[in-house]
Length: 102
Image (cartoon, rainbow, N blue to C red; front, side, top):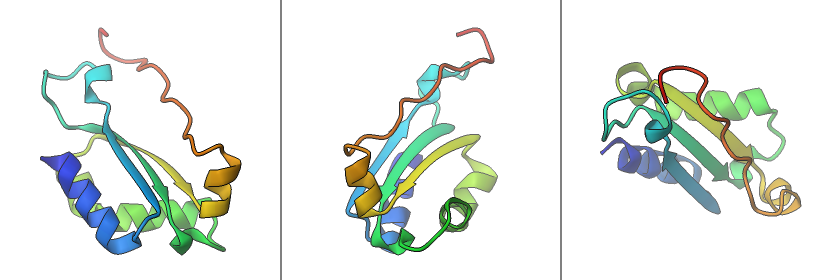
């Protein structure tokens, strides 16, 4: 399953203090059981002194294979431990899908 691959790759590469991978495909107009839309929340000291674009590029590189073949959409929420604490240890909710019939 793609979700487990994402979790494994991000865990190995970033040693996150917190990692959540959510398959949000059900929120979109895709066949039941699809694994094409994901939301990841990653809290890692590796993000210290990195701008948001650098953090996202890091995740894009780690998941390059999955992004080119399996994942249609990837929402990323990347935090340092201090930012995560200031965020009350919660990532924003995903918006409703604007496309398709759902």
